[in-house]
Length: 114
Length: 114
Length: 114
Length: 114
Image (cartoon, rainbow over all chains, first blue to last red; front, side, top):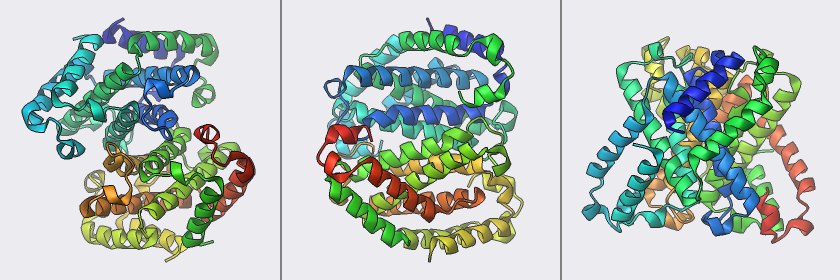
């Protein structure tokens, strides 16, 4: 499934339930922020959260939160007529110019301002 | 560009800068949460945040925050060996079963527990 | 109870449980952010969240989240040697100068940049 | 200054600017979440964020974010008729019963579910 197909599935999901009325951009942005925090929660007391530090149950819970964040992100972008992938491609070009590899390599100070 | 291609681009971006050392899942989850809040910020005092309420400058700023969220999301999923699109597809199946259209339609109370 | 007394109670609570080791400023800042999102969650699909829109159960849940946010805030400030009340007083002086009442009254545009 | 006095100062600040109209509980909860994320931001790539890892400039920026969080917290509690200190006292009693010191001491697993 592509992001475009996921967008269409989510449109249909909301339309079938008459939930479009709740999906204002402001509400979706709140929901996205809440989901992102739910994704952060299982990591908050861990050292690094690397795979080795997660048991299977925690990994599966995190996987579902990742899905929730993606779904709200796609839904919000749809409501704002933003093509997510084009936006990300452009931001990547911008970031490559802003942080030239040869200048910032191994420079944690530079990174810490990122 | 697909999510898989974006994942590969972000891997390369981090590798070229020796930034992989900072990209622990815990740090990426924090960064994702921070970006999600930056995305919420322009909406916080608006009525709904519909397109008509956003000027061009604000829309462009939001577009860039959407891109930032997607990039950290893809990067975090990569670090945790999660296929984002598969996870979202499965969650969608789960949500369809949890919220049957004929039962929850127009039911804001039901929704408010969502 | 004053903020100083709450700070002391929380120090004792952590010490008795040997939890100080988990309470790095970074972890506490994550926990605070997670709690703030839990506080946002019950409002995300509401119109305004005024008292009349909240039933007793929801109000009590929100009350407990408010308490959680305050406790992590006091704990984090303690770890960073910050006197919360002095910091807030100074910020208020700063805000009064930045937003003179006679200039910004009723100006939602000004506010929206706040 | 006590929390009650801060509450009164913030009431006056909003009233003088006719900003009460923007301060719905929902909007304040969003703003609080955004400020909490701004407080998390300077820590996101640090190891622990202990004082020794922060330069003076970063410490001062964090101090101001702590103040912002406190101010929105006090304002939100005011709008919801919640006495913050009473709520925190009660939560502390609850937490003492939920996590008896002699049972959870040094038990990071227990803690990690906190």
